[in-house]
Length: 98
Image 1 (cartoon, helix red, strand yellow):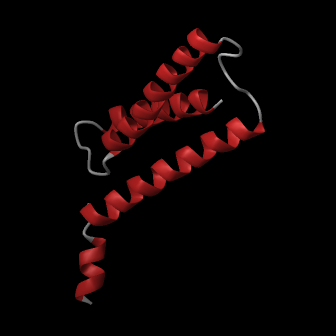
Image 2: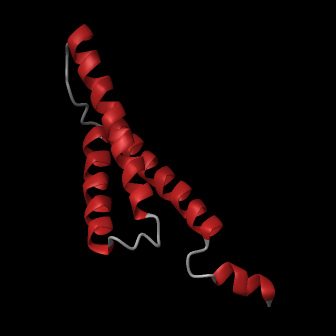
């Protein structure tokens, strides 16, 4: 399930980035790369596990769903840290100056 969720998050982030392109003020391209990197990693993992061990290709249960949600939340958290550090609107600089 986490493969499906990260792929969907990648599609959504990429679509939003494309609408906002070429101005990537909010680093949506980086967020898209987070999601597509995770999707590609899990796709390779699923394919290799399916080829070597067989069984289910996709896990659809509560644990897999919670893992997908956790990965998406963590990616958004890291993305927000990048935004705060880059401060695209200068809000942090204004607040620190007083």
